[in-house]
Amino acid sequence: MRSGGIYEDEIVGKAYDWALMLRFFRYLKPYRLLVLLTLAILPLTTAAKLAQPLLIKLAIDNHIVTGQMQGVPQLAAGFLALILAESIMSFAEVWLLQYIGQRVMQDLRMELFVHVQGLSTSFYDRTPTGSLVTRLTNDVEVLGEMFAAGIITVVGDLLLLTGIVGVMLWMNLRLSLATFSVLPLLFWVAFAFRRRMRAAFRKVRSRLATLNSSLNESIGGISIIQLFNHQRSEQAEFRKLNASYRDANMPVITWDASLYAAVEALSSVAVGLMIWYGGGEIIRGALTFGALVAFIQYIEKFFSPIRDLSAKYSVMQGAMAALERLFNLLDTREQLPEPSQSETVAPSPAFSVIDFKDVWFAYKGEDHVLKNFSLRISRGEKIALVGESGGGKTTVTRLLSRLYDINSGSITIDGTDLRLMPVRELRQIIAIVLQDPYLFTGTVEDNICLGDDTIRPRVAAAAAVVGADRFIERLPKGYQEEVKERGNNFSAGERQLISFARAVAFDPQILVLDEATASVDTASERLIQEGLQRLMSSRTTLVVAHRLSTIRDADRIAVIHHGEKVEEGSHADLMERKGLYYRLYQLQFKG
Ligand SMILES: Nc1ncnc2c1ncn2[C@@H]1O[C@H](COP(=O)(O)OP(=O)(O)OP(=O)(O)O)[C@@H](O)[C@H]1O
Image 1: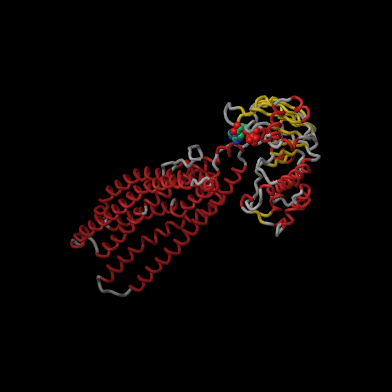
Image 2: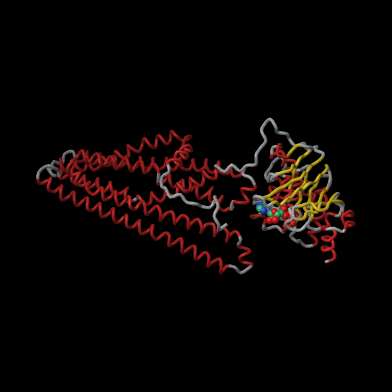
């Protein structure tokens, strides 16, 4: 989809949003000991960093300036020990953070996966698959970056900055104040930058989202694009979006470079001020040479996290946007309502009648696709739905398996409303064979039993019932033959037969068939017809028929026109009536 919608990658501008962060912290709860450990290491690392210039000061003031070399090796050893301690602690910090990050990401992905699996079909009608995939992969990954470069490092940076200010003030109040005279300017630069960066990043992310969704569509529809020689216009569109994404990045680069240059210049000014003022202090005997060197080192350490600010800002802003989208998805409550415990009625496999009564249904708003639709199906009957394309036949089958809930009227099994039956149990007694059967990657066997080991032993028998065994056994690896993505390495007819076998293996009481409209060759067609007949025998069947030849022996045929049932009866009755069915039949057979 190239248009908007709540699941489009909309953008939040903030780099820090407390509500989102507080909610996110809940995911850290299972790892709180590790988080505490990481937080405990932070002051130690900071202390190791802060102590190093002090040792240098001691080495210069007490030894180098005085020529007193005794004790220098001890200082050098101490210095080395500090460096070693700093690197070990930094390693532990980074490792722990990333470890926690990976665990949190894993938990979040699982929660999202379970959540989206429970969402209703109408949610999927509105939501582009690509955007859901992005949620579960990229967005979660962005949170990982936040662990690597964001939250806790910022805490560490703040600790270090405060520590440096503290130590400098303690060492020499006046020199510190002179040096810090550049700070207001630095804060002003950082603030001005933050405001402009926010707007620039927002643009980058929204353009990237557009680029992604366009890419998603182009790749998803690649065969159509190639078949209709539409590559050029797709390329033109992509060129436009690609360029606009690049353009959006340019201000970010400019701001980033400016910030870097400004911070660099201010840090040089600070060092200059320090040498100028500090030099005077040394001459007046108010400052030692070692202290000045230590000051210079502190200033370098002070400015370096500020220089990385833009990178961190970008990561944090990305993470906030990702969190907002992830929580939005998790807050989507679009599951089909399940009955409360007290009113639940399990559907009986030994039911005797399914009743659609005055059913009205619209996918959207008041745009009714079924109007006042009624149909009674007795156990063991074979009912066919026929009619022009778009009339609402498939919709009837979707309502029976409760992919959607009706607007008014009722659908009952032995008098019990479908809405009072747990969806899971209802779907256990119904199997649907879709027009365009979906095959998953895996083996043919996996596709028939859908990975259910209790059904696996019945796979070959089920394939034999519908006559799929003949072609499967001819495959080099038989039932273990690999199915490529979406079953592209099988013909349309073979895919149909596999999906029939799937339906038989699950042995449903009610079978819903959406007959394939895709034409297959005559041999496959015959195979499919035979398969179908065997699949339907001794089951209650609702079949959406496109080829009227296949349903001549149906117990009853319901003709649907613009969402209304206009005729109902056996083939012979309807032919005699010379109504819509008769005309459709004439059209198909007399050309
Ligand atoms: N998921 C959906 N969201 C919105 N409208 C839909 C959806 N599915 C179908 N429709 C609309 O509902 C109407 C009936 O569609 P349905 O698929 O039930 O027709 P059909 O009789 O089975 O058609 P066909 O013979 O072409 O399969 C159509 O106008 C269609 O555009």
